[in-house]
Length: 313
Image 1 (cartoon, rainbow, N blue to C red):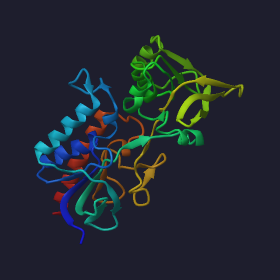
Image 2 (image 1 turned 135 degrees about the horizontal axis):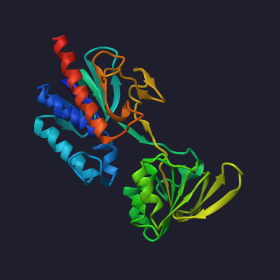
Image 3 (image 1 turned 90 degrees about the vertical axis):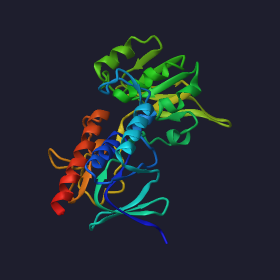
Image 4 (image 1 turned 90 degrees about the horizontal axis):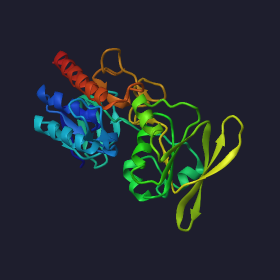
């Protein structure tokens, strides 16, 4: 028979929001259990230099997440390496079933499942995933030493990926459908001044071209959004950096959401549409999407959960 574990607070997710919630819930003596999910540490584990975390002029993303995990553990948070596959929020205590078969009953739940990379939805993109098409420069950039690479996107993620890839590539072409970027100005300045980077404005990726045996990328076919003219750009790697979508599959039919699946919280709090369920980080934030705002919301969620449990006795 599957094991059922009871807890006052169950935290689902392990990025800055989840670990911060673990620290604060532990300090409130709530004895929280945190389920890390499929990617312990979240998106920052696939980021290299983090330059906007207060107190660290520069820190490696994976190192920061390991430190946050260790901090939560030191405070008393029980951290489980498992993945929640089913979450039932119809009645309290709430029930979460994990991939291992273990179930958790919780008086309060903090959701911190974050977001994941978006894809263009092209057949050729799907076909070459893992064979030249990627959404993680820090994971796969090393494989393209002295090769030409294409990055698609116009926000912080795209510019950061492009700059990181210059450490390996002979040339990086950034493709964007507009003629200006959404990225922070300091990142844009670095990009435009880098000798290895070329920017292709007003173009969209239409097809990834490659070989079947062995499987690999050879070029991309792009289209001018104004003239519809098609051109091919030779490259060995294609990195898609067009943003993220919230990982809200567990609750999409149970909680109020907005902007394509982000969990709705009450203004000035982390309370969701179900009493006793709280949400923090990129799962609910489609505007700021920063590590520090996620961590702040994790703190808020733990304090909201503490207040909720105190009121319920």
